[in-house]
Picture 1: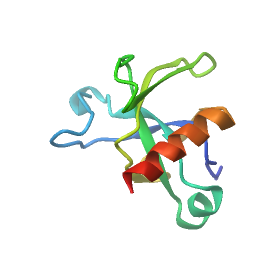
Picture 2: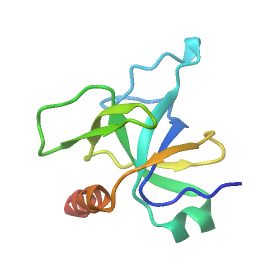
Picture 3: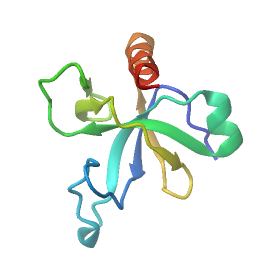
Picture 4: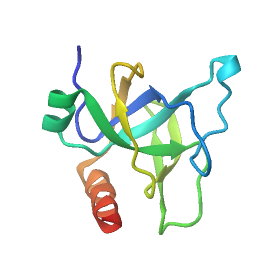
Length: 118
């Protein structure tokens, strides 16, 4: 098994969702995959098989206080990172797939925003 690393862009089965969580995927049509960026460190990911992520919307949001625009041409991920949602997922059970990586400076900004929540 490939161990995901901090800063990896992934697709993961993120359903079900509830309440104000980002979603609008359609499980009946098999549309449960969502792009995310991993912010947990490599040791956490390796030891627990879990990943702490920030989800990515398919739309570019204008409020830069809580969203961070992202474009990754290699993976075709384009939209906004939702910096106020920080879910934890079982990478294997949710069929995680690494599709890219963000820059160190972009990752550092995401981690800074995560720390501001706590």
